[in-house]
Image (cartoon, rainbow, N blue to C red):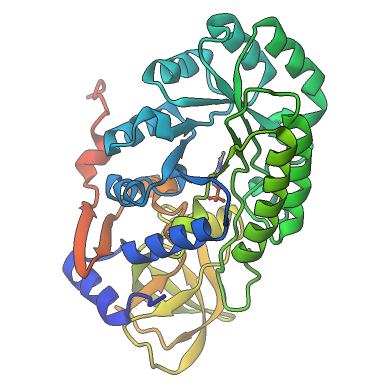
Length: 404
Ligand SMILES: *Cc1c(COP(=O)(O)O)cnc(C)c1O
């Protein structure tokens, strides 16, 4: 898959300035098709996890590929509907939200995923068998990676424990509820097929207790490469193994169900870059810092998850590599990259921080009263501005002046 060139990226930063998020539409399409094609001979549906990146144009691009949506808040549900998804294409997977928010989602007609027995009980009491629901289970599978992004383990707040199935059954039977799906999402960093398959087996066993299933949802956790040599999810291998196991399950269950996934990162991570400009080169006794006009306010993953994001110098791609620590301008230790070999960086050079498609803009904030950057989409040979950068006016819009 051809990447955006340094020339194209420079064209974007020359026209729209920096910092700037740049997305590559074709890369998103490529990732979608690659994932979809990995699951052969099964009825597979993808529901894009929109919390990764939710610009309306990105949502529409992904919708046009045939994808559904996974939304985790009522606001995301509204954004999905606004982008043109129909309610039955949206899966609403909230955690620790009020029952009122779930009722609102039912009224909007979206698919409801319940991850708490108390909510399941209220749902059954309110709707009986008139509104189906999916149940999110926690299989207690420990997916690799940072603890913040490992959500299936014993201490996790997500899902209903697989050990509480007897309780779930009582609630479902009491209210005569229709359970149309079983869901698990084990975490955001899965290295191989084993974790998936262990979770899958547990789900298959549990599914036998529910006669009304229409789908089984295996969440996400597909890992993408952040640097050369990274172990990434072998999608084709996982697809093969899961499809085989799923076909066997459907045979045992007696009916063909749909197989769902909710990829976020896998679809958009590599399609995005954050372009930043070097404000200063600062040499200290131990380090050469590259200070850029961005930071944890625009890309918090390095500080929040210890994530590695590759950094390139698109102004001087053939310069002599030198060792730098790239840091932001926020009054925090917002190191974007430690000890990186980067072609010589000069003040004014534009750097490209890679893998800024997922959880970059969507986690951005206004700390230090800084503004969120614009977003640009390269698609079908054209460069589109898809979000203007913020103004100070945007940041102070809801302030009410009561002290003079
Ligand atoms: C965040 C999330 C996803 C997407 O995870 P990625 O690692 O971005 O693929 C899928 N499902 C649920 C329920 C989520 O919360």
